[in-house]
Length: 68
Image (cartoon, rainbow, N blue to C red):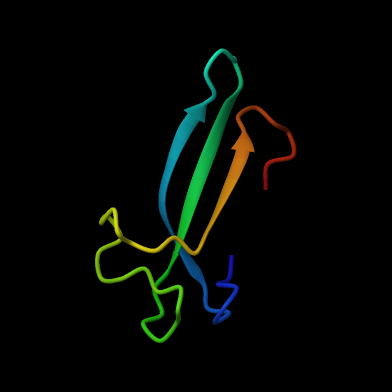
């Protein structure tokens, strides 16, 4: 996946499972960061920081056969 601003490759920073209250649907969320320091989407030096800027994210339903 590429950054929408600088077209450099993004890195996967984290992934977690989420669910809405009162449902049985489980989603997997992948968060992507830009590591290009010259880009406005630059995540910063520490991808584990809660202040790291997220460049993009993808949410897929767990068990969905259309996952990429």
